[in-house]
Length: 76
Image (cartoon, rainbow, N blue to C red; front, side):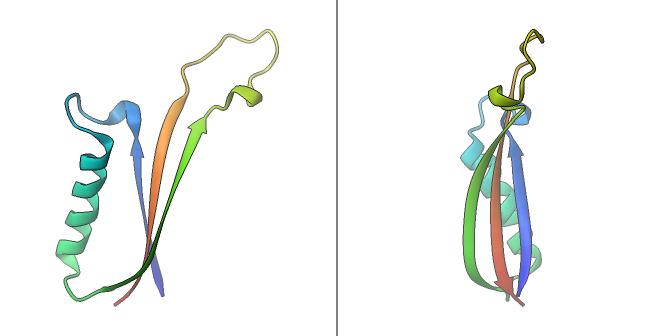
C-alpha cells in the first residue's frame, strides 16, 4: 500500500477559491497521472499552528495557520 498526503494552508488559498475546490484540484491532478490506481481509504485532518495552548505567557499573539490534510491510501 502507498500513501499520498495533500495539504492546503488556508491563508495560501487564492481569493475567491474554496479550500475544498483547491484540494479537489490537487487530488484530481495526482489521479490524472495514475489512472489505474486503486484507492483503498482516505483520511482528513486539520492542524492549527501555533495552537493557542502553545503560546507563551506574555508573548505577542500571532495569527494561527490552519492546515487541512487529506491522506490517500492506494495501490497501484
